[in-house]
Image 1: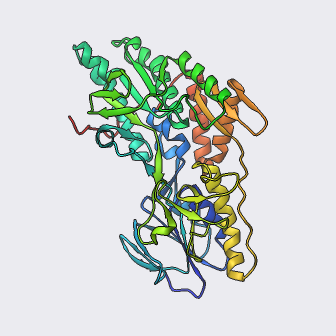
Image 2: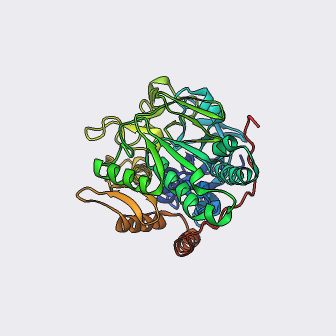
Image 3: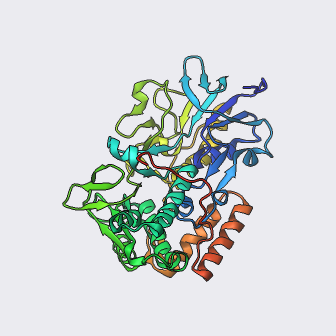
Length: 426
């Protein structure tokens, strides 16, 4: 892998998500050699992936080169590779470009889409966990508009203009609102030969309410906002089968749709090689102690979504969102140096900064520890928090001007079919 030999301890990080980059930043320029490995050469700001899917932002606005993050740090290296397995006995990892020894290993591989064993959805549905997948959704939406404009068959047009989103969490709610804005503002202007009322957006949630992890106040407000935008919300609804044309649910509801977007769940993305006791099967996450050490190992750590730290406050582990990953990464950056120096470590304690979701223009919900609010001010807070959390000044500026342009002109300027998407059944 062409990593130079060094007398310094080698710290290998697998994954360039929120946990990986925050840990790398904290430990860089210390008396260690750092090697960051990822199968992509960029960090993705996943909370805004839905805006790429709905033509609100270009992908380079929410992605940032990993090498650029590390460029000012000495003894720090990046390798574009996929880690295939871990050999803990030899302190070695096997990757797609070769093997590498480590003194300390940090696993920050995040999550992958969880289809809960439904092969029909895995085959025909559209996931949205990565930038290429978001671009696929964007292309498919716009291709459906183009195809609907030229078809004479009413049923075919209906299926092309029916969009089914499965999962009523923040991702599903935000995506439903964004696609509804395409219907309300873009379709009447760009596709004057289509009737906007023919386009329907369905949001299917298996639980009793949307945003189940947030307060009931947030759920009720979000449902109200979605209804105003024209989104048809169906709770207590599970998808049993999808063949690329028809959606079958646990209820009598059947939908003709060319597009089903799966936002109903994730599962951990572990690396092969560690003992079975270290992995909690039901969640596919590594069991870690309060220092993020993987159970049974002193020199292997897991951070963020791939880790499951059971505490009195969080018996099922911390929520799989950005803040726990960021906070764990920063603390481990300090703790690992203490470990090397033989000093006592500090236990991780999650500081919940609240949760939020946007449902479109001037519409958002925010849950803080002592306050809950919704509407325009919540939308403004949501924008500010996400803008500041973006990696890189350039990305913040681009997203700010994009949002400003979209707000003033009721427009989504990124509606380009750069890479046409073709479904398997076509």
